[in-house]
Length: 181
Image 1 (cartoon, one colour):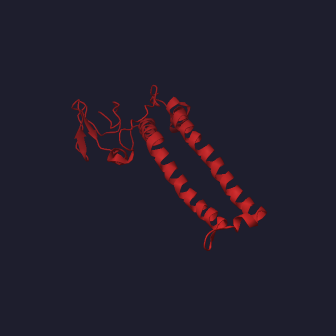
Image 2: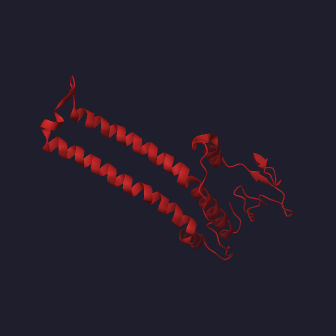
Image 3: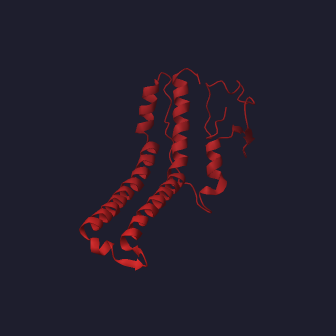
């Protein structure tokens, strides 16, 4: 049996003994002729959201060797200790920590300027629009920009690797439960 992530597997009852897939849902054939089930999470990534010409960063597999007697807790611990999981968490932290610090400093600067320098914040820029109003609107704008940047970073740097981890975890826990889905 061939899973959509390209790894051979079994034990979930979706393939036959000779390795052929049963027709259970939308399927496609890859270059090697193996049938794989389409994954809706890949559809979003393949739709061009990632930008033109951007190549996915390779991530090592989370699974080393499956222990047939592994419980679900052991499976999750194995995935958590894997290099792939560490890379996904590291990519997350390298974006979130600096972004959180920068946004918090920007917010504190706005509040401090509003309370400590009311003359600066009341300075007119154009008509009834003053520095305080522009800084307040800048808070909203920076929130939306940070949200967009986070979503883009997650899509380009973490989603594929996290999806592979999720597939590996599901395959391993399915094996730990004796093939139940």
